[in-house]
Image (cartoon, rainbow, N blue to C red; front, side, top):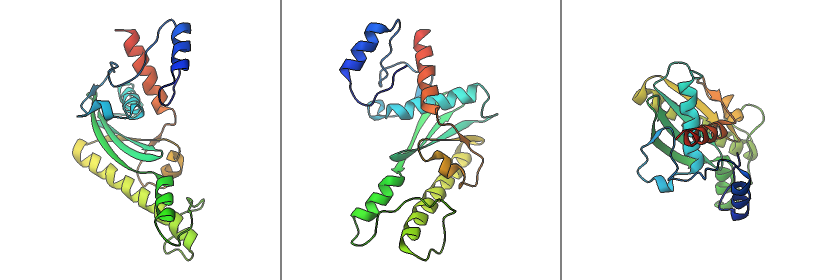
Length: 200
């Protein structure tokens, strides 16, 4: 399995020549779930692959008995996506990620320094500016995420919550709900997509 960002013709041609079976994953590739996104051509492939990985976890019982999975991917952007136990990708929301929030405050204000997530527990009230910025972003994202979990439970019933992406472990320790931290979720989904196409 090879994963690249963007079009890299040289890599694609080399893999095609060497592989017994080749699948290029894009919005036209068959996947083992039903994609209900209204504009599939604009859906990030990582979001769809993560949803497939989450559904695979539902199907194998890794999340217990759930009606749906909420996938929270902490990357450059934070995505909140829902896939049902019946195998329907319902879509989700996109929010600024950690670095985007710090950069926005630093670049769009006159005096705020670049912030960073606090290593210790976020503080309130903070008594100096860097701590105030770091704690504000940490608490803001944690509160936002908890609201999405509550909304998903209200809409879908029993929900398995999966954190993935670069900042997943940090927020797994700060969100007051049971979650599964799965760093390889996208690759799990890509493997399921590959197997699905191999069996067509």
